[in-house]
Length: 126
Image (cartoon, rainbow, N blue to C red; front, side, top):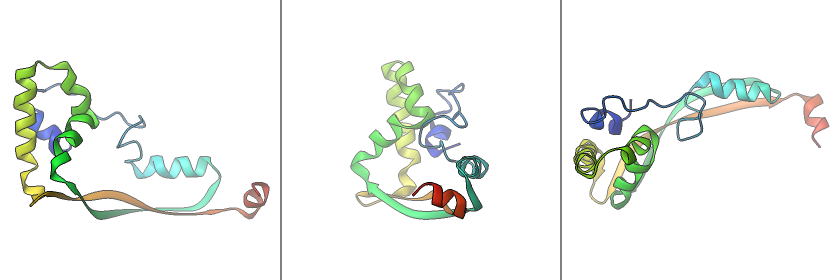
């Protein structure tokens, strides 16, 4: 569960969870799915390694970030204006530890992926 989802939970107890394999920011969140996609595409010797990458973006776009992405972004349009205001305030407060000056800092969970195309497949694609 993300920071935004945890902060919004009191007002959205039945917030839809991220759907595995669905389009969106978490579409490639599971190592097994990434490896399966590559294997199905003909790659061999697949290595999928977790990698946290330091990231940052302007604090001025934080609200746009958390109100438009993921389960919270899908749930917010379904609530009344008062509830939305409360949720946005709570989520903004939950992100406070990540705000340094005018930037939001966090570690992005990424994959470092290595794979090898077989010589037969590589020759067929040229």
